[in-house]
Length: 367
Image 1 (cartoon, helix red, strand yellow):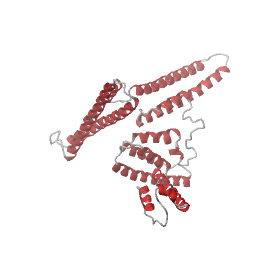
Image 2 (cartoon, one colour; image 1 turned 90 degrees about the horizontal axis):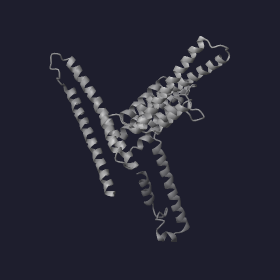
Image 3 (tube, helix red, strand yellow; image 1 turned 45 degrees about the horizontal axis):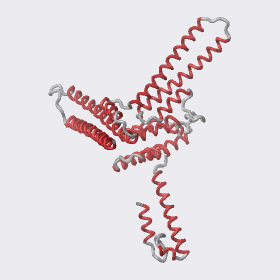
Image 4 (cartoon, one colour; image 1 turned 135 degrees about the vertical axis):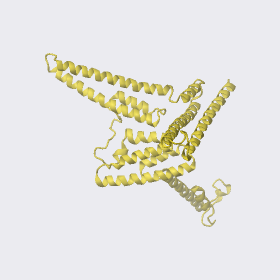
């Protein structure tokens, strides 16, 4: 829009001020050198303005982390413009909060307790808008790996990524993290839980290695094995078994996710049916995204039903003199929303089934 306006202004300029004819016009070759130079300079100016506008579009906010989230949001072309406008306003508010928090941190030289609250509220905002991809990328970049979300507080003990590029000390734990981070099938909550478990096991491994080292050093200075030696040996063996069991379990999670990344039975069954068709990779990516949307709807229906039942039970408890299922306006509204969500699930499932049938038909035609 800005580019069209600029170009129209340049084209409407008086003829004696500059020559804006098409450079591919044959008559342009007969133009005087001054006209050619003016046209050249005009186009350079236009490109400069376009580049400036593009940069402004990419960096709408003052804080780098908010611009990062916005860039991830813009990658989702399916978001309605009205939703984008609302999200932009909300992100602008967080931009202001983070900037104020950063300035306070620079002044006080310590981490403010409210920073964690802002971080949590920002993540809840992304969850509310169902921006799983943006939330996942945000956590990986600012929480799990570089910890900039905490380091920006200017706290002297803020976590820093080490020079090796590793998040965890143990090589096996780091390998698991790399696999989980690069697996798009782990939704944000699953990745968060996986990261927390890796953090815990990394700490256990460090404690185990320290205990083992102390035990070997002590044992090397002793001529005879005593009762304390036997106790320490039993502790180290038990710790090692727990570590190996946890690593095996974490490996199994990744394997199961690769085999079938869905949890809801209906979604898992549908995905297994899709995989049985030996479709091209690009079609599988599209269908997986659609099944993921279906699973979200199913989970939303289940959660909404729990809320509806809780409200009904509360209403029944406070209305003992009335029929058990007497519904007020609020319950009626919840019931209507529940039915609407259930229809969405049916509609989404039918859409995916139809999409799959079209792909199967096209595959048979090719054969």
